[in-house]
Image (cartoon, rainbow, N blue to C red; front, top):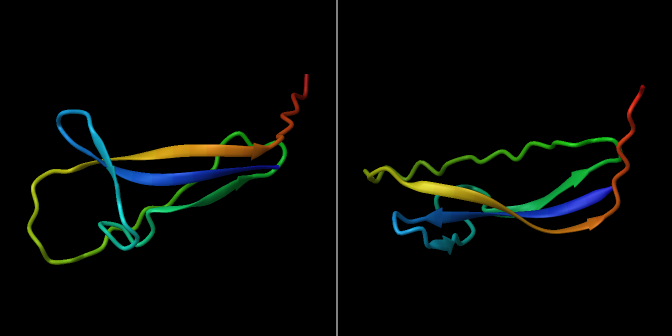
Amino acid sequence: MVRVYWQVVHKFANGSVTQLSPGQEFTKVAEFVTFNNGLSSQSVTLTPIQDGIAELDESFEVHLINATGKNYFYSSQ
C-alpha cells in the first residue's frame, strides 16, 4: 500500500504557484490518497466553492507529495 499527499495550488500566468488555504476555491485543498497493492491509479475529487463572486479564468494544479510505502504491481502473462 502507498499513501500520497496531494495538494491544490493556484497557478499564475508567469508560472509561479501559491498554496491554497483550506476552504479557499475548493472544499478540500489537500488530503491523502491511498493506493492499495496492484492499483496504478486513484481519483481525487475537487469540489469548487460557489462563492457568487465573478472571476476571470484561473488555473490550478494538483501536486503529489511524499509517497510512502510500497506497491506491488502484478502482470498476468
